[in-house]
Length: 181
Image 1 (cartoon, helix red, strand yellow):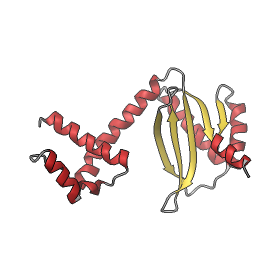
Image 2 (cartoon, helix red, strand yellow):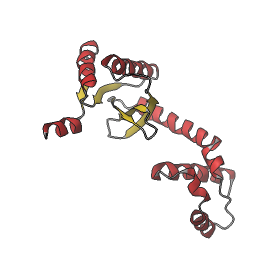
Image 3 (cartoon, rainbow, N blue to C red):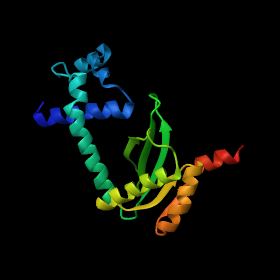
Image 4 (tube, rainbow, N blue to C red):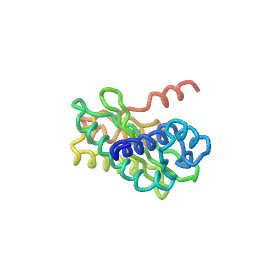
């Protein structure tokens, strides 16, 4: 394999792990190694440390650059969806996914917010930070979709007045579920 082929193979391994939810230790599994040895006996597999180290960092930078490129290129504007949840370590997380005008999801990011209470002012601050961040990157968000918790309802009401050119919507799934009770 050429150096270019090796780089492509390593990136594909990262993508396999991420898209299938595999931990990087899958590469050290005997069955995994047997499959790769069968397909290409001379192939040298990475260790999980190399896969999850500098290679992951470089690949994630490339993914992030691609997300920025796609987001900037959307001439009709993006929809920002966001929500909060508690992870397995009992940390509060606030995540953002953009949806392009063609329906392509772009994972923008997530941040740990355990030190904050879930209040309207906190939600507004996060959304306004997001608005400022994407404005600097020449990314156009037309709409924002959030869940139906009280602080999000109040946030939508306040931000509709402050940003009349933006659309602030509740999540349809949350709304539908609430109507069924």
